[in-house]
Length: 601
Image (cartoon, rainbow, N blue to C red; front, side, top):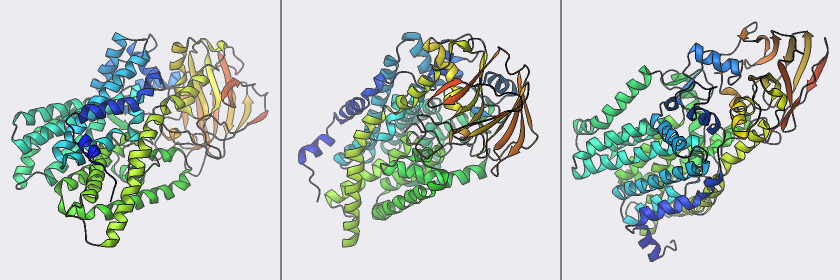
């Protein structure tokens, strides 16, 4: 049925396959060595180097927005947060082990991003070894286990976390999570008692590396339900060591103030269950689409919101087709049920933020296991296959499509996608160097930008590394690819109006939950500037805002900029009572006809 050759089967079952796949994964992602520092790497670099303008402890580098009034006011003052941010905005992640790995980088080779990327590649290689060992414990015959590991190793969704130093936490969390599953299976299947302790320890290391390790918790639960034998008491008892670790981590996570709040992109399932449930139903089909097809989950950042429904429908359709093909296997094989249940449960933490392929490390564990079982069953004519000729024709057609997607296209996409972080970061660097030398020690006011996060928040942290003059603070008034009308009211006041709203685009929702909109008459007071909302759009975004400064607009302490083409240029202040119209700004992240920034994929 399929032209599998005996040598290929032998290679997939070879005892040295874990090492071979580790080498393959590293070779495909080797271009990451030349990606350099990008985006979040720059502010993290300032933290690790203990720059004087940063007062964040290195181990708290992933918890820079703890949600306190004092910290938020400090970031608002400097312009790192836009004026419209939720006052209690919190983005605080518990990743001390990942932070420690970054700290070690800056102790050993602070000036070499290439060596930092090399370390990430070594962690990725270790992850592929661990995943191969896990598949070999769960799947038979050996060549099917090897096929699952191969599919996982060349999954293009792994590109960004491997190639982006700031996202190394995903690789570390998945590595320790996979080791926890290996130890747990050895304990339960072979009676190796140290496995209980090792599983709990590895899970703890994973959770302290990043929230992505919650995917391992999902698979541990799936193991108890689908693989564990015996009654309810035995199944519950099997979860006690790792379950105790998870509970301890969850309690610590809450008491220590970690978590998210006030953002339109990051949702806390416990703090905002209804909002999370609504987002979950829209994000899950995109995540499944990204896992199973060449269409990335990041499509959410590439098309207008009104057109996302078609992609969501496609995600559900692909899932339904796979369910039809896999249902006979799921009925007969408990390992398949383990993979399927673990995959679905792992979608829950993955859906806590906007859809992206880089969130699919644990979802892919189950998906590639199921796909290998389907392909192996068709090739070996397994007993679970139905007698129906129509099912077999359908299953073979679907299998051929999956081989094309995951064994032919995906390795190519993996190699190419390692540059996606650089493709996103380089335009931000080019933006930073367009700031004139005259910004030194002054307050930069950008009246419009395509995106606040990319074109304002990140820019000041790049300047020290680029050897450029640094402003005292940098602020953006309006952000988003929308036209803006600017009126000079008096010596110190500008009124900005945009019919579409001030923070269009996916990343514009990061700083404020749409469920907590600004209101007409609301005034935000910042050092040297205030913003008063005069009118709102139908969806609650500011449409007209009055900005009043503590000094005359022509005061030399202010440096006025506007966006033109792909850069900042000086903004000529209008005269008293005059009105100017600025066209919708577009950047390297804006698709033709689309006012949203590109994603990391």
